[in-house]
Image 1 (cartoon, rainbow, N blue to C red):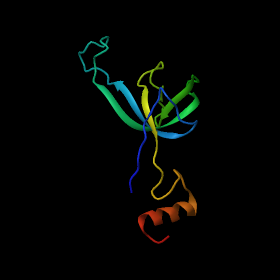
Image 2 (cartoon, rainbow, N blue to C red):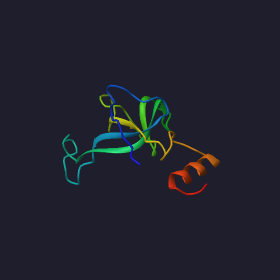
Image 3 (cartoon, helix red, strand yellow):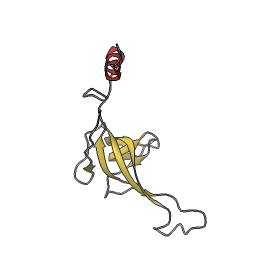
Image 4 (cartoon, rainbow, N blue to C red):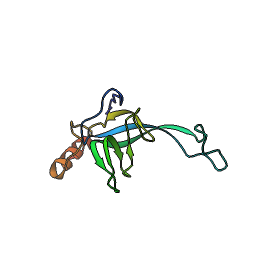
Length: 123
């Protein structure tokens, strides 16, 4: 089985509210000990992919409201690229569906049957 991913520039379009996505994060690691922390080039630059979900409205634990943002499994809020905030999301892609299906989530007997079919086992 193969899954194709279509990356979307977050400056051009955002996903629907509540949708899980793969998100490409751009940022910079903290500088090494002894480096000038005021230097914007200090620290190693990164670009990586993490699973997240997109939401039109999110409240932090401290009650701060965020709009049109991506949230990771640790509750860290990241803005689309070009907006205020650290480690912005440059691109996003819908997660692939479960093997042999057109959905991302199944429960109960449907999950058991679909998994067995994808694995070539009897349900």
